[in-house]
Length: 91
Image 1 (cartoon, helix red, strand yellow):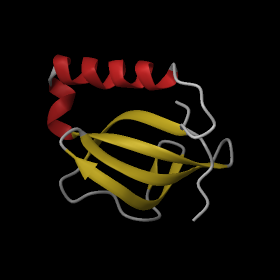
Image 2 (image 1 turned 60 degrees about the vertical axis):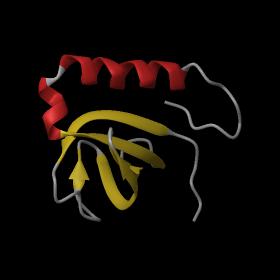
Image 3 (image 1 turned 90 degrees about the horizontal axis):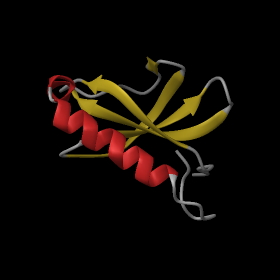
C-alpha cells in the first residue's frame, strides 16, 4: 500500500462504532482504519482537495467536552508539525 506523506489531526468525534470505508469526514474520504487507542482512532483517508492520502486522527466523542484532552491533542499536532524528515509524516 502506497502512503504518501501528509497527516491530519482532526478535532472531529469518532463514534463508538467507528467510521466506515467510503464515509466522508470534512473533505476526506475514509479508505480504512489504521489503528485505535486511548486518544482516538486513525484512518487512512483520501484528501479530496489536495488529491493525496493522509492519516486522519479522530478523537473520541467524550474528549470534545474535556479542555485538557483537546489541549493535549493540539499540543501533539504542534509537536509533530515541527518535525522535518523524509520518513516522518507532516501535519
